[in-house]
Image (cartoon, rainbow, N blue to C red; front, side, top):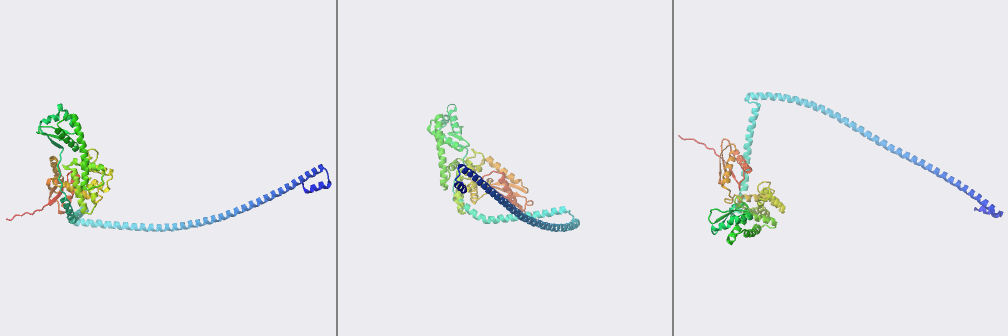
Amino acid sequence: MPDWLAMVAALTGGGLAAGVAFYIVGRRVERRVVAAAARAAAGDNERLLAEARQRMVLAAKEELLRAREVWDEEVGRRRREIERREDQTAQQLTGLETQARELGRREQAFHDRERALGAKEAEARARLEQIAGLTAQQAKEELLRGLEDEARGEAAALARDLKEQARKNADREAKKILAVAIQRIAAEHTAESTVSAVALPSDEMKGRIIGREGRNIRAFEAATGVDVIIDDTPDTVVVSCFDPVRREVGRLALERLIADGRIHPGRIEEVIGKCRAEIEAGIVEAGEQAVYETGIKGMHPELVKLVGRMRYRTSYGQNILEHSKEVAWLAGIMAAELKLDVQLAKRGALLHDIGKVLTHEHDGTHVQLGVEVATKYGEHPVVINCIAAHHDDVEHESPVSVIVQAADAVSGARPGARREAFETYVKRLTQLEQLASDFAGVEKVYAIQAGREVRVVVTPTAIDDGKAGELSDQIARRIERELQYPGQIKVVVIRETRAVDFAR
């Protein structure tokens, strides 16, 4: 209750009804006052909001005006830039048009001058043809022929001078190195064939080897994979096989059966099994011995085993293991003389023919197989290149591979180191002479030194001194491409001029 209503009630001392009436009136007055105050506050708020909205609209308009001014300024600047570039382009086009007109004028002048020169040239050519009695084409051919002959002569002379100069500088050192290496090697090679002879104590042993109805010899041949040849030769039986390992197993087993005297299928299988195990052990031992003798370290055991298998392989009758060891020693000596890596040279030389023990089991040449097996067992890239390049199948990547190739040629070219069948030998000589005879200007061809040298006699009027050197190179390259031969072949071109007269 407001204070004034309480005071009125106290002053009047009225009853409850009067107090309630006064209270209700007071509450209504109070609510009206509050409502009036709320309406006043709401009006103030709306007025403030309207003022705020008006200020925001004004600020936005001002910002928009400023942005529009900036945009108009940027558009004007770009328009001026575009107009400036258009002016420059127009000036450039004007200059280009001027240059084009100048070039057209010069081109026309050039064509006029060219036509005038063509007319003068035709006139001069006609005069020259009239004077010389030759057409232009004939004169051109004559000139080219003379220039070609002159160029060929100069090229041949230059090539001859370069070869002579290279020989003077290289022959001395090469001969010294090869001589030192060869003199320090004294290896013997035994020629092997595809048969092995086994001596018998008497001819009665032949019947025991054959057995009843041939059961012993059939069991022996089936277990070893070899052919046993029993003929009229006294006290001798021949074991034949293209596989040298099988042939050695058969020879050794047959000798032990003959010494033991007990020859029957069961005993045959037992002895062959023991001999095969001994041969396998001997292969590993031979590989280890070769590695030890050449001083090579750290070779993979499988490669060592393959090296041992070379003991039972031959090439042109030359034992591959002995040949590889000889090449390794030669390559090591030459590498030491040239201050190169001796270990890599020996390693590449010992493994250069390693693929030959795999050619009957895998597809590919012995060079490809050797590269594959050396790569498989982690050999040095220089060693792999020695294997790949020793027949010039790929390029030499280091001096070591060249040394290995040279050592291989020295070992194979040594007289008596290799041999071949008589029919193959005669056929190769015939092919050699026929190949050299196919060249123009060749009069006679002689294959001498067991096919290691070819002497070509040429017609002096058809081949001059310059062309003689070129002809020898062409014949040598063709021999390399078309023939298979051990070692190397020397090509000698002989040009002889004789002057004959008579005193009467």
